[in-house]
Amino acid sequence: MRRPKRLQVAALCHQGTGHARRYLLVTSRGTGRWIIPKGWPIRGLSCSQTALQEAWEEAGVTDGDATPNPMARYTYHKRKEFGLGVPVETLVYSVAVTQMSDNFPEAHERKLIWVKPETAATMVDEPELQSIFLRESELLKS
Image (cartoon, rainbow, N blue to C red; front, side):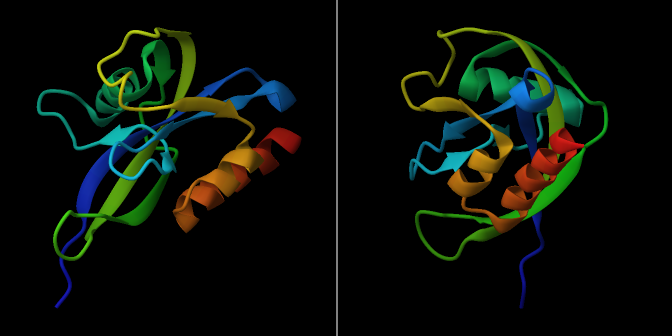
């Protein structure tokens, strides 16, 4: 018996253009793995608005433009304290970041870093998220 997938929304935050473009990674609160800001849908907000909210709470993004539609999706197993992981499908929204703050809700719980997409692909654990970063790298080369 397989559990149905749950849904999360993520922000693929970036700054710069062309070869100078960098992507934002944050650490997860539980394991300290490198991830992109993401969370459960928020009632009353669209998915792209939820992605911006997660980028604020987890990384301090105070101003950014999110695409209205997801640019990608990936699946992973959310680790639970007890029992099996929960399968999660994550809708990814591209967010062009224009302003950030050092004072944000989870600032003391997370680290963040701006990296090239090919570096990000080596830092994240989820194979489908790695593929998204590798695809971004290829797009920047063309």
